[in-house]
Each structure stands twice: as structure tokens, then as C-alpha cells.
Amino acid sequence: MADLCDHDAVTLAGMLRRREVSAREVVTAHASRIEALDGIINAVVTRSLEMALGKAGRADAELARGGEPSLLHGLPVAHKDLADTAGVRTTYGSVLFAGHVPDRDDLVVARMAGAGAISLGKTNTPEFGAGSHTVNPVFGATRNPWDPSRSAGGSSGGAAAALAARMICLADGSDLGGSLRNPASFCNVVGLRPSPGRVPSWPVDDVADVLGVAGPMARTVADVALLLAVLAGPDPRVPLALDAPVPVTGPGQLPDLLARDLRGVRVAWSDDLGLPVEPAVRAVLAPARQVLADLGCELIDAAPDLSGADDVFRTRRAFRFATFLGPLLREHPGQLGDNVRWNIERGLELTVADLSRATTAHAALAERVSEFWDRVEVLACPVTQVAPFDVTLDWVHDIDGQPQRTYLDWMASAYLISVTGLPAISVPAGFTPDGLPVGLQLVGRRRADWQLLSVAHAFEAATGYGRAVPPVIMGG
Image 1 (cartoon, one colour):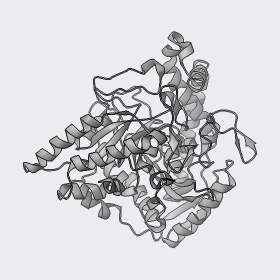
Image 2: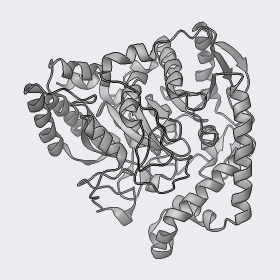
Image 3: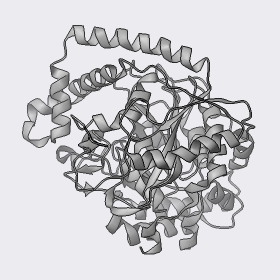
Image 4: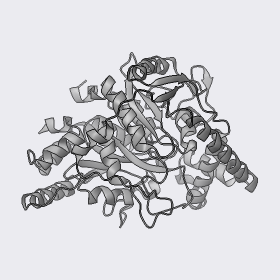
């Protein structure tokens, strides 16, 4: 049964539908993988394995009675520890919530369960999701399956590491400044930051927020598309939810949805977005340009004008932290980590003039972005500016000789793209000489999530890097 963990989600979904394997067998195999490897990786930090086996048995019984399988029937998943799950501990990576058990599900959790997915537990995240390195005072650090001495990225680092180690086959995550894309790059899996509103989030904290999104992560682009089909679609409680569900009734439809001739697709290529990038990352990404050309894409060397995006991101982020976590700082100042406290304090310093400046800059950026993407369909650029770093570091303090001032700086290649409001995906692009994964970031036109997935799917098929197996599975 351990071999079942090697199958991607689309393959497993087909096997389950044809009753070649039972949901209980699939869940048992993945639960065994968690028990065997998570002592090394520390990805699935709260487990609900007995509960999962019960759900798997009921799913098998329903199918035996002639029930129609849902889209994710019997597939083992896990939920980020920022997403509330009814009856299962949800800590947000904070000592203040170490024993917190919600009484309701977030919308992404409910949609996955409603589509037949079976949750094996919660995946690790930094405290309140702050940062692209997954470590917190409740559970400690998540380690990279490609090298356990390295970071798995973040903030959806537990999800990415669990996927890479084949402990689950699908995962949800969230992305404010790169939290679906950064760990996907670090762990050699696929992470999609959807267009704002594509995957509605409920409960709603800020009805006008377009910076933070929820989205899918998996080992292949097709698996990401499968989960996106479940997570996407309107919800009457979410004002900015997009009215565009994808009519996918079975995994067999995905090849046709993703198949595309890329001849003539215009792609802008930038190997740095004007930012410092480690030479090892540049070297891994360099061949990707030719791969896209060989697929028929028309490439130009260009990057959008992202001036002002850094200030917009930092201002919006600080305002968000002050709004939602400011009361915790007042009530429990000694029980918040440095990153969270720093962001809250920056938010409390903001003035109306600061917020007005950010709003104006954001509008100007949106205009320039629209003009740039009138000329191209996709931007190809780095997901991260560094390869996976030492897991004991707090954050990256230097990139190719250039000091990074704060724990945010080294994530700019991801968070500057967040501010554009465009869909973006990290897809495996190769390995450094040390065997560390590097992802390619592809950024699509506004709301063109499925067209972007088709480009990523073609790149994935042409390279095959995602099929590599991390050493932790091989006992290395």
C-alpha cells in the first residue's frame, strides 16, 4: 500500500472511482507514510488519522451502495494550520491558541470535505503565517524533504513538505506575500496563487482585501487544477468572490482543459525582476527560457514597472496586522514572536497619509500592469531569490552580497507580484548542484487562471522535474 503514496491525485482519483483501490487503503498508506517520515520533516503537526480512517470507511460504503463519487472522493489531504477545522486543533502557530479547537470550518475546508476529500490533519505554518520560513513556538520548524537541514519555506511550508514527502496528495494554503509559491519552489511541488476572488475565503475579515488569497498546492499542475475546480466559485457571503466556477465533474476532463498549443504565446522573461538573486538560482532557471521557446512561445526580455509595489505591500500588510492582531499585542505583548510584533508595530505607526499614498500608488501600478500584459500573456521570473536555506536561520540576511534589512526583503520576487493582483504559479524548474529545488514563477493575465495553468502544465510536461523523488523517501 505504500506504493499508493507515489501516485498523484488525478491518478488516485481515477483508481478510486474505478474501485481498483479503496479509500481506506489509500488513507492507510498515507497515514503510514506520515508515521514513518514526519518525525524527520515535522509537516503534519496535528493529526486526525483515526477520524480519517472512519471517514474513509464511510466513503467506501457509500460507493459500494452505488453512490456517485465526488470530485475528490477518498483523496488524503491536510489543511494549513491557519484554516479553522471544526473539532480539530487549530493553533495559527501561536502559543496563545495552542489548545484552540474551532467549532466551524473555514470555507476552503468545507469545500474540500464536501467534494469527498479526507483530512489527515493540519500542516505547520509560521506564527500567524508571518514569513516564508515555517517555524513557530508551538511545533518548531518544518524541514525540507530534499535536505532536512534546510527550510521548507512558508508560510504554507508544512503543506509543501507534506506533499513532497508523499504524506498527502492535495493541500490548501494561503498567499499574502508568496506563501503558496515560496514553499512550492523550495520543496519541488506546485503552488498556485489564484486571482483575488477566485477562491473565496469565509469567514470574511476584510471585504475589500485583494492581497491575501487562499489556493491549492499539489505535486502536479493537473492536481492543482483538480483542487482549484473544487475551491473556486462564488459564495453569497463573500462580496468579491468571482462568479466563474469551472464545470469539472471528473478528473478525466482535466487533460482536455489543460491541453494547449503554446505556439505564438508571448512570454516576457526576467531572471531577476531587478532584484538580487543568488547565482545558483539564476543558473537553474536559465534553461527554462529555452524550454518555453522550444514549446513555441515568443519570448522577449522584459519586466513590468513595479515601482511603488514594495511600499504598497508593506503598508497594506502592516495595516492588516495592526487591524487583526493589534489587540493581541496589547493584551499579550510577551507572547508574540518578533516578526508578528514588528509588523503590528509598523501598522500602528501608519497615518491616513500613509494609507492614501499606498492607495494611489496601487492604482497607478494596476494601470502599468494592465499596459504591460496587453503586450504579453505571461511573465516568467524567479519565485524565490535564494535556494532553500539553513533551517536554523531566522531569515535570509544577505543575497549575493546585498544585505536584507528585514525578514520581508528576501521575499520580494513573490510579494511584488502579489500586489499586481494577477494569478501566479510556482512550477518545478530544476535543482542546484547541492540537489536543492528551484521553482519558476509564471504570472498570467488578470483572472486568466486556467490559461496560466495550461502554460505551466506544458512546461511541467516538457521538463519532468516534478517527478523527482526527495531523498527522505529513499532513506537518504
